[in-house]
Figure 1 (cartoon, rainbow, N blue to C red):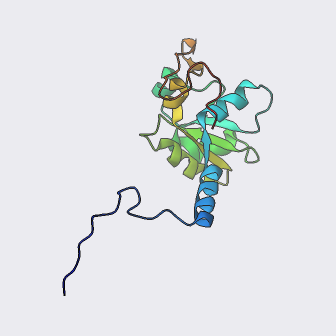
Figure 2 (cartoon, rainbow, N blue to C red):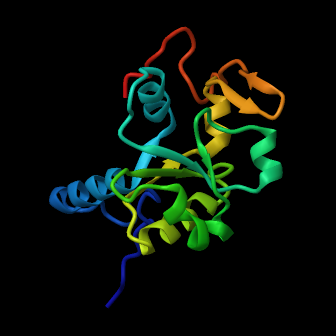
Length: 161
């Protein structure tokens, strides 16, 4: 008896995609837990009550370097002792930290959820806020950088997604 060897499967499809119902549940859950930088920025730019508060969970030095305008500053290490005096549990909280290489926003979201807050994490964090060309505040005032064409559409306000 001989065994015929087959070439390994395409690395993308080596593990088959999830069934459509499972995929829908997974992606729906992802949207429950995450907010997009450009969505947060567009809601804040519209003015009025956004229906959420943005929380920067970084250190004071990082906050001074730049933060989302109107964000609340509450370092993750201080959430347990200060969140209930600074935040309203009836208002969803959108957390962020530096960027995709940092899980500080995730740790902050966990700490808030464990205290009973409704929470989402802003994907991309402060890095993508700046890279997408949104205004940010520093200890010296407001700044804005040109959008990075690898993260935001050139010449358009909407990426179409």
